[in-house]
Length: 127
Image (tube, rainbow, N blue to C red; front, side):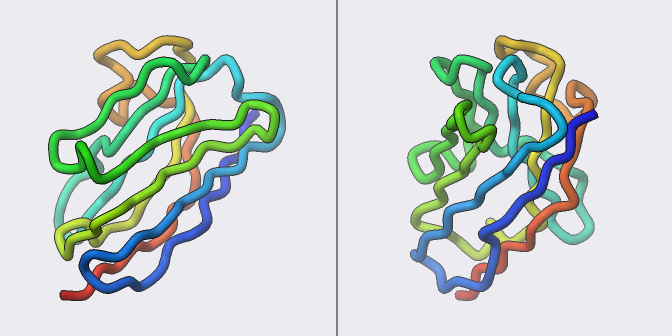
């Protein structure tokens, strides 16, 4: 069983930055693809970014390319999401998730491809 706990959310002005962290416990996630998803009010949960177990491969939603960076520290069992140049449309509840895959595949771009989820951290971007 894996427990994921997100932190680092908050209120920020447009153009600002935040760094989200996702700490895993229960067992190592060094062999798991890890992903960040968000869910805006009235919308479904969507992929933001994903990273392979090794950290060598990453995936980004088009809306965040060039602004967000996903990374991981397997020694700390932690995944990060650096968010720069934030926009009001980035406002959402951000979730960390772990998949049973070690490499990025189509399934790791959808919520259904993930087995473990955190409770989420709120990010609010004011204009």
